[in-house]
Length: 246
Image 1 (cartoon, one colour):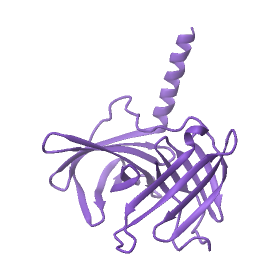
Image 2 (tube, helix red, strand yellow):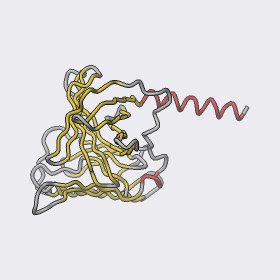
Image 3 (cartoon, one colour):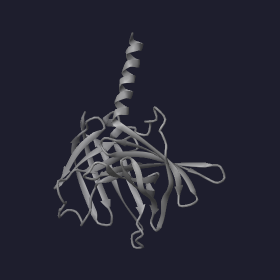
Image 4 (tube, helix red, strand yellow):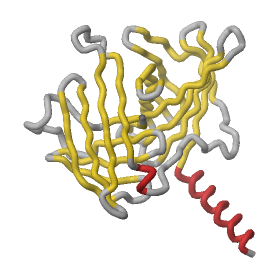
């Protein structure tokens, strides 16, 4: 009986996970010569987790993780996926994908002055049970740690921009968070929050956010109502974004 209950519990969890995650998959080329496959999982929170598989001419393949978020239009039929590829904590490529009613209208991969159009994209049917890219933390100890990101700026006076995030435990369900970004203007913030599963909310001055904590990254989503104008931060500075675990 105990074994049967365990199976039923796992089955219910699998159903819940499938309901909360939408899988996407495409195959095509970047430009005329780079063959690749992009697999993405989208959560109802707007978080995107994916991986790019590059097929080399010598028969070898390279798999690169990517994390990002969804941008919605008012009509709910047109959405944009913003995904960054990561080599450790360094962003090494950026995908911009414009979707209309689930179909790719336009897509590009870029890194500084390199830009490739996504050509000949074919929709793939993700295999059943492939919702495996998300890995939400299951307890407060898993959430604690250091996260960061860097990316090449193209600015010869400051070649890299980036940010960092530190999460520490302050109680059974509470954390202290500290975040900063230089892009190139500076934003710094810290505070205390309650962790609810893999999510927490925070506020610093006029800036409010919600955060999803994965075992591999944190996505900080801006929930501020209106423009951010704070004397503590530089113009257009923010702590919103993806921080990869160190």
